[in-house]
Length: 366
Ligand code: SF4
Image 1 (cartoon, rainbow, N blue to C red):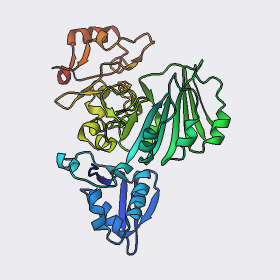
Image 2 (cartoon, rainbow, N blue to C red; image 1 turned 135 degrees about the vertical axis):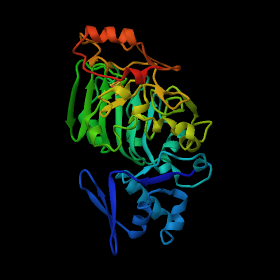
Image 3 (cartoon, helix red, strand yellow; image 1 turned 90 degrees about the horizontal axis):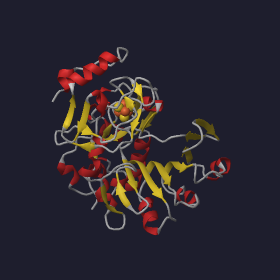
Image 4 (cartoon, rainbow, N blue to C red; image 1 turned 90 degrees about the vertical axis):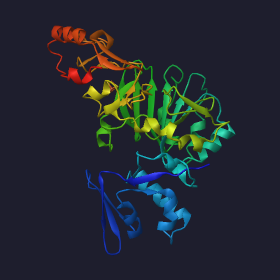
């Protein structure tokens, strides 16, 4: 069964209604687009709108026109799914729910089978990310998948398995290819080749900094790795992301639309960085893509059993002289909660007077 989806004008956009048409402005870059007044009225409603209401609100529009307009608005980030959905928002049906996936990623080891292909055919999203693992023998599937409804394609490869890859040839053959990320390379290097961003990464990490995030709406607020993403593993398992632990059945035994639209699956999309242990104290959270598996506590806070390689309490990265693990400086984050062992923490900070981060110990004590 398909579900309702609730959307609203993105926070950094403004709509001005004119006599015969309206304009929508993006506040930061000053970009603007023109819209029919019927759409402007919908977008100007501060409570947003539900997909199922659109046929009533746009009585002269054909279903196909509504879908095309929605795609345009979504691709330009003019509308965004609202995050405070009530349980009832998930209980009714609509036929146009699966247009709003920001990212779809799949891990590929074998040739793409018919079920996976059919599943992907139903998605229309900004980006398809392909992860080729050690069993992947060829990149031929990219040609097939590039004809599907994804605006751009990113591929992730291991240098050990694709040393002889001809990047120029690949770039020429796949016009939608926007990013190639190669891990385990002999050195770090980034370049742009025929419009394609190529990142060679010596050692993969469970988080990465990306300054482009500064241009993304809500970059400081939400985890951008999980937000709006669905992932399908090589065996068909459905997850939030390649690094997520929790699984939601497989594409062979589960309706992927039910998974995608469920409150349980979308929970992590709403994970606020200010509610994630340690990240909430980190000055890099606005540019950080945190890929660690995250778990939610009943009180709404999040934690990870993996440390990243930065300790914001000492302002130091793993490998630097000043670095200690969180545990070594008295910071504990687990299912039970977040706490700082004050004596240990003060001793560490006293030994490292240059560690500039100041935190409110009282606030962080259990
Ligand atoms: S602590 Fe900082 S660097 Fe580490 S994952 Fe969180 S935001 Fe990123």
